Image 1 (spheres, rainbow, N blue to C red):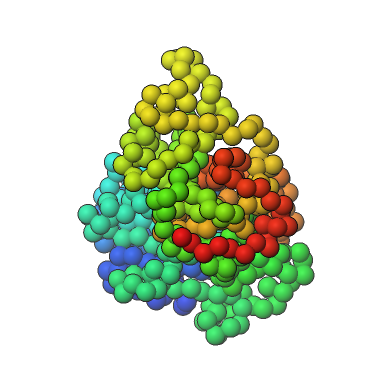
Image 2: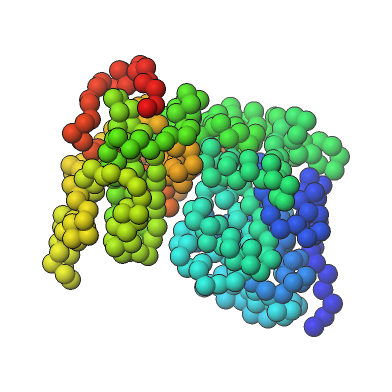
Length: 445
């Protein structure tokens, strides 16, 4: 094998060097919240290429979806027309599998681009280095599945993304800032003191460029999140982002204890070969107290019935989607009947248009309290639940969205929460939207 020097035809930009040096010096966990056009994926692929020589093994470059992985990394180009895959010199490549987006290298390593949209496929593999690109838009279950693998084999992980509201990306960055074992860096655009600079000291993205985008129609939420890395700006196209920020400022995302004197309601999104998500809540006066959340996939109904029985809660009848009454062709038994045999009585929410259910959620959110720990995964789904991007419309500055939800990892938690909003429990009290915004919360029992 010829002598090869890595990184190959690549030098980290001056503002990327601290992160590069952290990993070259043996760092294991790093977070980079970097602004738009900061060179995230070019940095990530070169990090994988260089580390692949230091320690032969499997290296993953994870994007939110398989499709994005192909478009952004596997078929991606730098601004000067160089392919991202050129990070691997031709003399060092043993084989390339375009279908599986995998490169085998002559020194014994493998680099592969994958999507987090099917996290169960990640089980049973043994990567030793992983780049999570745009992690704030990914299914966080992917990291939860990969985390124990890297802990066991001493591998590393780098999370590189722009801010997308106070979802799991925000919480990861805040944890990393306070954890001496982690690296965390937030790089902003513009001319501020913490903004990225070129070698000559000028801004990488100038204030003039940002202002031009603003005048050209880029909305302020996009500017704040993508250029200034603000976690206070909700995800563009988010259905509930602004309302969740508001109730968090009111102190309604906090420690919400289970009250044994009140029944616990559950709302289920029943997956068919997909994830199942369950919200747990209690009602007191006008308050809806969400005390717990659970989501899993690849499990039968018995798994979830067992989970509920292991919790100390006293349950009211559960709520599920209207099609839970439909009998399956193979067995002739509905899922409601199957759950009933397991001791769980389920009723169904009325059939409704998704947009009507979304509006119902918006109406009840001011009444909602969430336990910040037990409901963290569900809240991340609600914050990230957004409209589907219209790929056929773009003016180069703004993104356009369809009036339909994007079906991704957020759908299960958002759908089950919508069912909870559509539920009509015997203890529920109705009030107008105006009143729900004006209520004075009763103190928690």
